[in-house]
Image: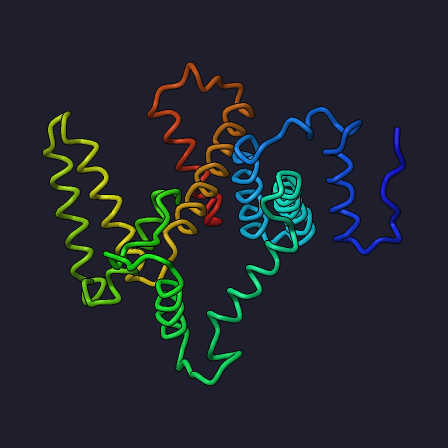
Length: 264
């Protein structure tokens, strides 16, 4: 048993001390067992929780979830400290230097006219920082990104050299074309053709100046809320969904949809 680090410490320093104590001999067995690899899933989960709090415009939950992500950063830095590889100061120093270097329009003498130019300049500086000469414009797009986000980033990269649709209209046609090919595809080609549909939809979202991840998240929420209402309507009427036909469930779905629009 040991006392917790005092509350008189600055909050960030207290958090660092708490994590160090958890990892120290006599600390928490679970915390002592963790590695960078074992914490990977937790980092992803906590990051998604932050996104969910942002989407819900829930400041209290956002503050809490950001704390959980901060804990992940502190935890990884503590492991790095114990292994003599890096520490939290190195993490903070590295990101500080990166931000200053990649914002010459703020901390230097250059000028960027708008956000698009800022992003182009950012990518140029980023490529210049790498020790190896890039062989492709797509170098540096992380392979670890979720597929939807990676598709968007790849499309934005190639658009920098003009390899892009001129507007949304031809992309609508491309989506229709890919859907036609998907409907005609045999079993061996279904996955590839479905991927082409999704890729073209991401392109369409970009041309409409929409974020495909945000749009899909909103669609998920809408479906979940409506389906929960369908379940409630079934319960209110003494119905068991497992014994209902699809047609019967569709009628409840339409009813729930009408309620959303204030048509009931």
